[in-house]
Amino acid sequence: MSPPPTGKCEAAKMRKLGLFSVMAATAALTLSACSGGEEKAPAAEAPAPAAPAPAATPPAEAPAAAPAAAPAAATPAPAAGATLQLAGLTGDATAGQRVFAQCRTCHAIEEGQNKVGPSLHGIIGRTAGSVPNFRYSAANKASGVVWTEEVLFQYLENPRGFMPGTNMSFVGLKQPQQRADVIAYLKANT
Image (cartoon, rainbow, N blue to C red; front, top):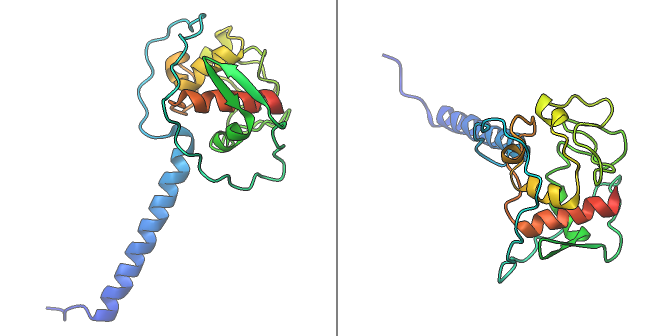
């Protein structure tokens, strides 16, 4: 029978376990940047809704905004006072820039700069599936959707529910104010 492990051996094992745990947590956070959590199986293919959703009632109290991280050097600052009225909410481009940080993992706002997702430059008024040199899902290309502020507002709540068959794995922005803010940011900066 072998001798029991020494204290040094156990400490080394614990350090390795701790390092592994940190690496696993980092990988999970990185991989969940676009998915936002658990994915649902896409619903059966259905035509995209044409009418905007009914106006959402703004929450009585908005949570305090998180401190803004320093924007990337290539990220233009939102136009001063850039706002957008949408579904009874006023979108704020500055707040939208903070929310867009999670979108930046897969999308750029610079023209012609495709990543995992297409460039969002000029998205307002553009037809879905039309960015050159980007490989879209068949559902996206065939949707015929034109990205208006109202359509983006619906889409960003639940992309896979809005457009079954899309390749976009992001689960959506459930808070209407965040959606209005991101759209104000895109409108002011693309």
